[in-house]
Length: 141
Image (cartoon, rainbow, N blue to C red; front, top):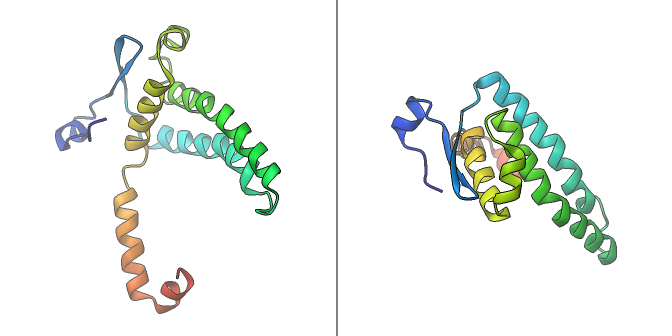
């Protein structure tokens, strides 16, 4: 997956993905629908990660069961989230019959790249805040 160029960003160029033997273009969501999609992402994936993160670390059997559940459900959730982001632009049944899970994972990564474009800025702000706030720096160490 290539990083989007500045000209792609400024032109609001669609996300280009290959699923099965075909190439598709997923239009970018504007601010408000993108927010709604991120909320959905959090809701959908919280249940998966919660299946093994809420378990006591000493209970290896429960952790293994939770991990197994998450690993089985995760590819399905990623595909659902790609289709949710794309709206009606992707032919779901055709893609599910032709694409590999690896291709769907790549498409999900491409969607995540545009859905969270501000992560580098968040990392920078976090570093600045830690440097300027001794109490915050102590609480994160």
